[in-house]
Length: 243
Image (cartoon, rainbow, N blue to C red):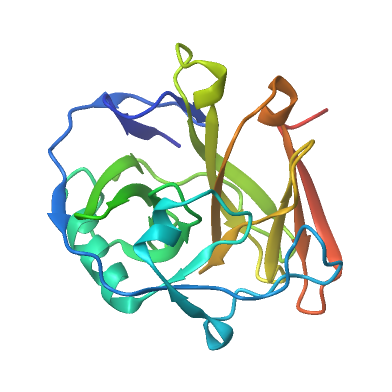
């Protein structure tokens, strides 16, 4: 599987071969209403944290541009539609893509994952400010190359790749964003990072994504925990893989 990354994107940490590509300027739009999940705090609750929009409350631009949160926000359909228009109009993205999941957790960043039934996929990053939203694609599989990854089992968890802060970044600017697939039996993905509260990954359509600030060398590594509908652990994967 070949995946390409924009030459202007942050340095990538990926599991497949990649090549560079040119970049186009992002579009800008106003910010529609966005909501925030009000489920249990994953740092203090043993039960799986809920991300249901049925218990969502309205989030302000200040929330989206404020401090990073381990629980993702729920984004309004209007905001998602605006970002879809920006991301999918970019010819860097393979044709026939549909959004499967979006991840917003503060600091003005929203990550979006697009995919097709044949598992070709792409990522897009939106920046939120008081002036609006700017979104642009950052990576995509090469359309003419077949997806050769083994099929996902019901309890499978797989990191496809992601991006990190550039090697020249100072420690206070370190961060890591990851995306991947989860099997049909997995209803929630929890990310365990040393020295951090549990992170609830955004999950949809069999794909997940999350990001966090890295405050120490050991925090580049993490554990993915897959929970079933009852909140029971049914899968666990380490990144980087061990053994």
